[in-house]
Image 1 (cartoon, rainbow, N blue to C red):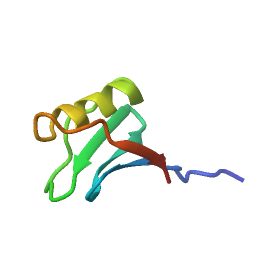
Image 2: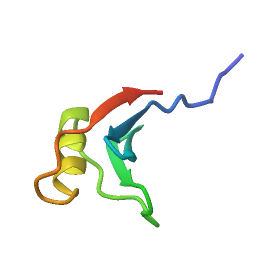
Image 3: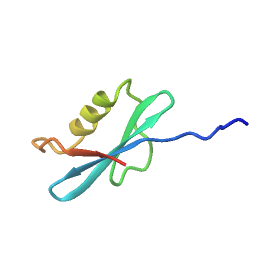
Length: 70
């Protein structure tokens, strides 16, 4: 029996006002979206780089979000 399903891991980024976005694991790396994004962003080689890219996309001066795996 062959299992072709893919498990996607997601980390939700939360700030004081609520959910800011999320980071998702893809077969080729990691990507992130902010709340309200229409399309997928770039693919990054590691989870830490994707989290940093998400943070860099927020309003300057925004504190580092809390990431929770879902």
